[in-house]
Length: 597
Image 1 (cartoon, rainbow, N blue to C red):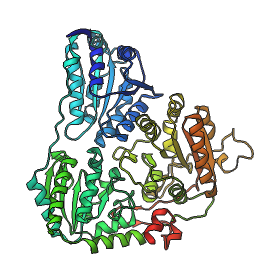
Image 2 (tube, rainbow, N blue to C red):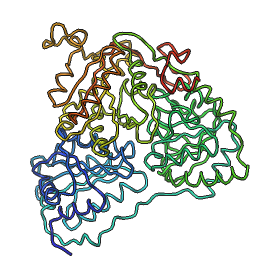
Image 3 (spheres, one colour):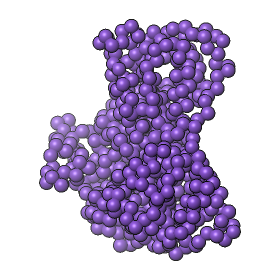
Image 4 (cartoon, rainbow, N blue to C red):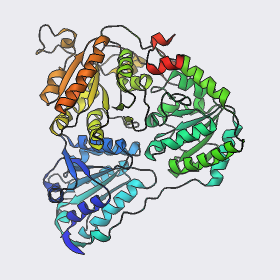
């Protein structure tokens, strides 16, 4: 046993739990933790420009690499309330992050002290656990329990609030005998796996719907192995995009109201059986339950017991970690395949591939200013298959999901349920901190980009290079499109005549904010693109600038002001606003050409 402050013990516990990186903003009430971090020197720290930014950096850090837990730190009062959005985003998508806040001394709680707020109560609805530690001797075990809860069952965030005097108090603690608690993860049984596969075998047109739980469980390889053993096509949700490569013969496309493929929706509607693994039947994926479930039998596998039957009651439910379930599914399926007991899915899988070859959206527009569809076509053709995309919400994200191609797990990093504007920049920085070598391309519309643009300075200061492509139509595009139902275009225009624009600036002078100047003022590099012929040189130039200066580089693409992106209220009623592809020439990405060949 050794004598130390409670906060020194907390840092030792974090080390034992595998923490090597934190994001945050220091302040008076959390300075004891920063002192302990400085003394140990084992946990690196990146200074955010906004505490919400720190929480999204922690999210990106967790989402990028299996096993990571991002840590965000702030002082008392508004630091904690600023991080609520990050906690909500992490909670909604089952992402474990640890939020640590300082607090007023215990004697000053509930006395309206400066920056003393009941963050424990405020954050409880969007965390797995939120606690203000009132006894110094509990600090090591509270941190131990925090990591145990974040990793057990359905993953999620935890907030630990530390009064100043609790941090500073002396305690006895033996880190040498400390061991992390073993996480609890429910597992399917052999009998459950056999029943699920028997139901699958009885179907004529089965599908596997893979959700974010497959990514969280690091089970993408097992998913592909199971699909290949059974010959059953896979529809990933947006949170699982990349779990099976877009060009895999059994990748059947995404289904949904917005972030979906025409062929994915058509294949879902043609199916008669769905095995959902690690998904939550999100409404943007399903549309109405009536349309989505009609004529289909469902098996649902999820790590959270209360998730089974929450949206609709499946014909068979299994409470299990996705990896544990898939290990059994693979075992049973491969045994049956070896014994010749699996039905052939060649005809059904072939029908799915035929839809994938022909049901494409047009991207090959030559308009100037550019249509967004052409921007994503250029990205497909000039970025390699190892590119990791980071995005959050808006028409930019919806179009990205419809037109881009993803080939690896954790290479589409997206906050799905919460969708806060501004998430993209800090999340991309968190991804970069987690993986110094990955090729990262962030995607934003102009409004998302403006929300937390100050975090670009973090990338410049800490040498966190990545490419950020901003599609600028100077509009709240998704809200403008939604307002069509109200026959209005109200308070969604971002354009104005910038009085500082050069007389010969051209189209961008009426688009309002000069992102080039702002980006450069924050210590990064920026390139502006006006037509498709400029995209490939811009990407090459951006890569050279990142290599030379080790800072984020922004490519701003000037779009036409109004483009309606395909979406609808039901998966069988998608409004296709633009012409559809009639041949490979209308959607000439490598994948489209390969499929049509």
